Length: 195
Image (tube, rainbow, N blue to C red; front, side, top):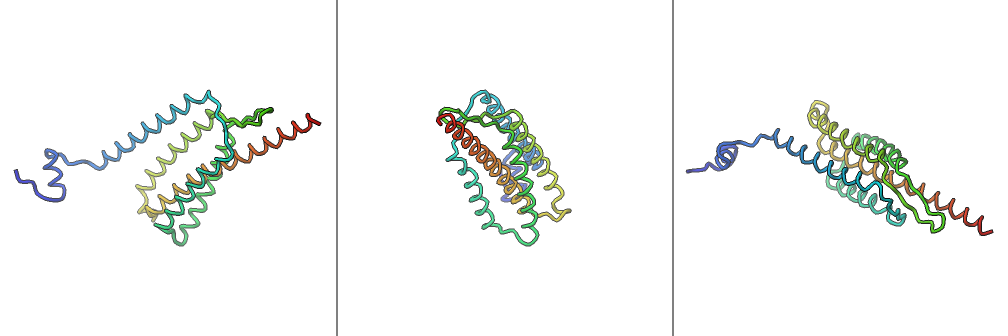
């Protein structure tokens, strides 16, 4: 059997006459993503009963990596003109959401050892899940209407990256500031007791 080279004909010949539908591929991609997100959230919900140690000295690492990745992305595809205004507005939205998310995560301190602990709150996890759902919905709408609304694919990608940096970076900033305040209060209380 002679297989023609290139295009849909060669793909159809190799797969027994079936041409792969890109719409189905997109649905499969969304399905796989939904399953992965569901597994991650199920594992997070299962581990909610365990308190984890909060290490202030490592709170800066994730935001630093995210900022470095964003800078690298901007070096590859530099935003122009009004794109910077859109990205600043998107960052502000992400930062606001991140501050709220950070406030939802409880932090406790041991009064004797001053060890900080955190426990994932159901509200924070459901809040994050809601953000993922909204993100996928917005991405679908923006991809479908990008040409009509004159939104470039690069701006769309940059916007979601900047939203993530604002959300996770400011969430960690809020938690760090709150933890430092708790440490100061605990040290002051211990100093008063010692006096």
